[in-house]
Image (cartoon, rainbow, N blue to C red; front, side, top):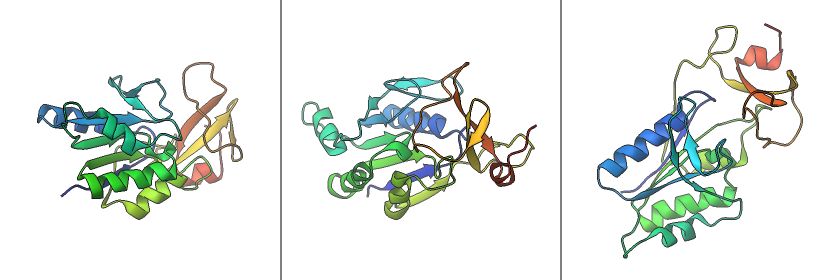
Amino acid sequence: MAELRFFYGTMGSGKSTMALLIHHNLILAGQRGLLVTRQERRDGAVASRLGVSRPAVELAPDDDIRQRCRSARSGGTPLQFLVCDEAQFYAVEQIEQLAELVDDEDLDVYAFGLLTDFRGRLFPATARLLELADHLEVVRSEARCWCGRPATHHARLVAGAQVRDGDTIVPGDLGPGDEVTYELRCRRHWRQPERR
């Protein structure tokens, strides 16, 4: 029986690494599936901060994932799984399509993403995943705030200063010299930014 599984954690918790590992193991087991992403740091690939990457299907906001799966069939062989990275950036309708693929096509879906944005609010797609997923799993690692406490929040920094307003999705953390960066923080230092 197919399931929709949502794995969530902070930046740097290993979500993309786990997504790549699950995809790799399913392919080795002879299954057929797609690796999918949205708003990835490297166009057309799922990339771990550890340096591992793999080409992936890059979704646009209006893409129909069900149609992508139908198009991926070759020689009449249906897909058996989807591994979906950066799921917090998907459209809410795309999350509903993932649930439909599980229920109607018997496709296992492994979705990976963040719970909250830099304001501490659920992403719309994340909220829908929490409502629809068969299984929820926290990806735990030793991601830490600069003070040493476990990191639970993401701070958006613009020119080094934390901001709390702005568009939910602003790509950043792309490399040296970027004006927009993100930093892991404990709740205390997310609520009351202090300099190191």
